[in-house]
View 1 (spheres, helix red, strand yellow):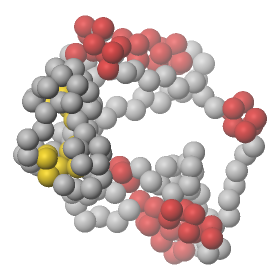
View 2 (cartoon, one colour):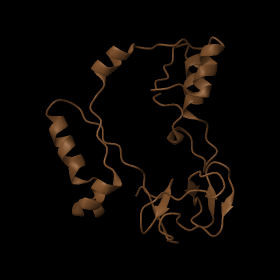
View 3 (cartoon, one colour):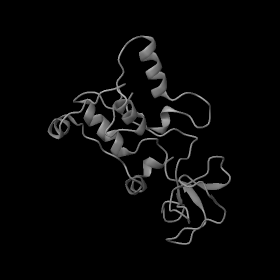
Length: 173
């Protein structure tokens, strides 16, 4: 499993087990090994190493740099400059990068899922919506009340600290 700390490996909206737990159970049941990969180590993975269930497998920095693929991201500024990006799921830069990359080998395209708004921003200036108490990111899981993803406090009268706007938009569509 890659990046066992990623939220997509478990669904907060349904009572399903975490993919890491399923992997560990299958490894025990089938008497085989398991591999947790990531750029860092989650608390759960560190516990597995600490109690002897797992061993670290790490490459040195030079090896990692030599093998690392080119990663390009598209930010909101670039998306705003691309007229086609408003209608398409992938902006022009992404299509060009995919086309170019396919000449050298496989290409991974990762696109956020529709129907789930993990982060919000001011509709006017695109400043991320933050909690007034702890500056954590605000969420609207049920498309109703805003609350902080860090401290859980509700945010009844949100307004943008930068421009004073009161309307929100999804940071990721």
